[in-house]
Length: 83
Image: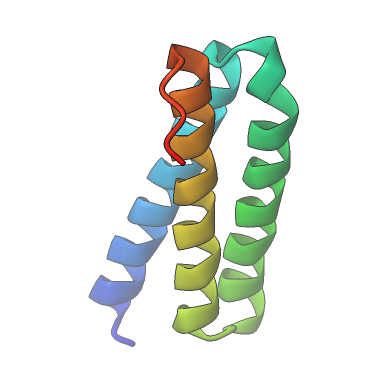
């Protein structure tokens, strides 16, 4: 990857972690442990990607899974669980 692509990825990944942090502050107590765990998993995946050059597909899978967890937590917080 070129330096411009790496910077763009780093900026996007940093923003993901900022948003997860914000979600952990504003979610209900019932969802905090799920969001905190998800944040830790994403943070580790980002660190692995940056430090060891793990595959982008691994990182994308982690982020996709995290998005699903955040969406489900948000639905539960607003009382709209989708089955």
